[in-house]
Image (tube, rainbow, N blue to C red; front, side):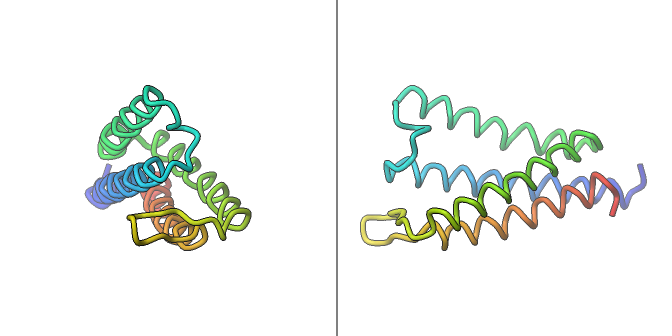
Length: 132
């Protein structure tokens, strides 16, 4: 692997790590608001966040090591994530998510932010995985 390819994998790994942290923070906010069925039971919420935290750590490590097919598969999952976010944004866009006691955003507003973040992450993964 050339130095340029190695750098692409490193950049993709860092991007995915930041993406994962942002998604984990978003999941915590949604869980605290009480609108997520995935964290309805106390034991399932803990498992959900521990699993998410492990993904935030382990997936970037695999990308950093330059595993081409793994990086490509994760890029494809991100494309699917874009589809799902878009579906949610346009189906439930007017629903409110309380961020704090005095501040709330709509699914549309939050979804657009997450769409941009996921699209950039997908691009960085594709750039590394397919050496674009």
